Amino acid sequence: MRVAVIISSLLGWPLLQDLLAQDVVASVAVPVTGREGSEQVRELLTQQGLTAHPLTRAGLTTELTEWITTTQPTAVLVLTFPWRVPAAVLALPPQGFLNFHFAALPGYRGPEPTFWQLRNGEPAGAVTVHRMAADFDTGPVLVALPVPIRPHDTHGLHRGQLALAGVQAGRQLLAGLRGTATLPEQPQDEAVARYWPRPTLADLCVRWAEPAEAIARLARAANPWNRGALATLRGQLLRVLSATPRPETVAAPPGTVVLAAPGQALLVACGDGQVLQLDVVALDEGYFSGGQLAGLGVQPGEVLGTPPTTPSG
Image (cartoon, rainbow, N blue to C red):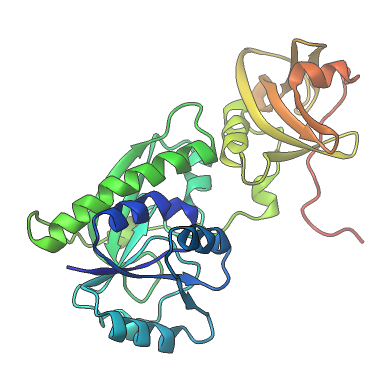
């Protein structure tokens, strides 16, 4: 059995390395351009003496058809890919195109599910392998491997766990393709399906009237890829990378600094009188703890804001 692999992100790199070690990879294709590190993947393949087959968006149907005709894989494994695979080529390999979606399906379809799962406070993500259909992230599920989201996991930490879990999911899939294990093809339940778009600027902004826990989750969901959740301090952009809800409550408007102890802590009022401790923040001048920010002159009573999400004027 030989498989062809499409990959555009380091998220799928550990799985690709495991497949290469098993000597089941006929060819690896990488998009010429992509959102998530295609160039890094190509460079790593070159370092290993491998040549990536280039794919372009404009010529995708022809390029995939020629590639599959030449390599004759049992299946094409899609580890990450920024573009829709044309329906005309999905049935060309005997086992079709099998996509590794690094989130639970069908509830977290879309290009950036890790952000939304952390933002929404889900207890677990998943690596889900499904047979690709014409629409994004549809088609029956063959492998579903839960991956816990720990209380302090950031976007980057959870992606690291997903990448490692992808190796296990890949081994389960190969066992099924070889016929040594059963691969139940479970149709996705469209009644609970939801597509989550790529986060916008508005999705990344701190709204201080939200509960403290919701803001803390947003900070983790945006760390490190967006350098945190977005707020303002004296009109300057303030990025919140880590924050901890506190048990006490205060009678202060949301966004108000209620404690600024240099070298110790900086506490901010949130919705329903809740309090959030700012642990790690970033300004143009650098990264600081909340206590360091207090030491720079932030005073109790100052109000942190929310960046505008529409152009002014």
